[in-house]
Amino acid sequence: MWANYLAKSIQLELIEKILASITLSMGRDGIYSYFKTGSPRSRWSERACSAVIYYHPVQLNLAALYLRSNGPTYLKALPLIEVKKKIFDFVADSFWVVEAVLDETEVNRPFDSLISHEKKVELAAELSRSPLFRPPNEFSYFPLGTIKVEQALLLEGFFFSSSAAEDAFQLKDNPRRAKLNPKNFPPVLDEKPSTWHPISWLGVFSPDYRSALKARSAILAAVALTQPHYCRYMFSLRTVYGGRCTISERGITYSVINERPHTPPCAYDINLSEDDLGWLALLAEKFNSSAGAVRRELKALEYFYRAWALTPEERFPVLCMAIDAIFGDPENATQSVVDGVRATLGGEIDEGRLRKILKLRASVIHGGAPDVYDSSKYPKYFSRYGFDPIEDLELIVAECIKARIFGGALHEHPDPNEEAIKKARDTGRLPPETNRLSILGPVR
Image (tube, rainbow, N blue to C red):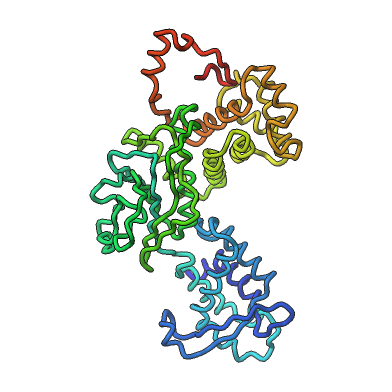
């Protein structure tokens, strides 16, 4: 039964593509590869036989693209060159299955025409058991300076924890936990003291730190959505930082230099509590899904995260990409977004106003204006509605994500200035009601 499954599997298809990229001769474009081969899972020093083969770029790239698209999800976060390196490692580790091919005299023929179907199935079995398809999870930790967590929030695949917690890294059974100090970044005890002192950590379990970074982006985008709109984009001069610490079978590694901050310098700390566990659990479920619609939702969150720290004019085109990720249809882009937004937020949304935002989007995205403020459509919109179209788009994208991706389970946190605003209104220092009318209604 196992052999029958492998005969029709992604693994066997991939083996065919990998073997089609290899010959015993350089030819016109062969890439030299030398390695030692030996018994299954033997150490490098125990491998006695040397192998020299050549990879051909076009076929190799096709194999790597197939693997990236159809293999485990974490591979989608890796650049193509890293996927090709994983193919090289697999071939070197599993070459013992087909090492008899080294005696072939038809050196110009690709391996897929020299190796029997039975051997290909055996290679497919090795592939299905290899770290490529069954990778061990690493633990990547991201230091946060703007998010407060009173009690650890543990989800499937990720967690938030206070840096002051006794077990901030959730490594109860890991012998390396004694080497970590969560109050500093880098958190490694034997390093020089750091001036970076995170208030919390986001931990992500993933086979590769780059896929952990993509998960971080989606998670923090959702965290940003818990903030009232004007707080979300209100920044201060506080110091924020990036970097990561990764714990794996190979040891502890960290990256500090030239890393982008994980959050913008938010004017107000974001407080996460057990009240947020519901929507966090929904997000955790989506990371385990391979459904196309769910992957588009995660992409929308990544775009929203990318736009978070940008200035308004830079934010606008990225938010356009976010809404396209949710609703876009290449065959009918504008109509699909109009229909999607109105179906999600309600038919009372002013369709004409929405279409004017999308025309401004087309002007910016398709080369009409590199800066949204340069578009002739921008002042016309502002004059017609008395409201900034960039802010309108921010509100639309945020509400669509909350409704479409989280089903209304993600609610904004209380406004940190609610009492101060009420007092200012009561004393006449602010108007009693706002006269700012967005496409979704009155806003502060």
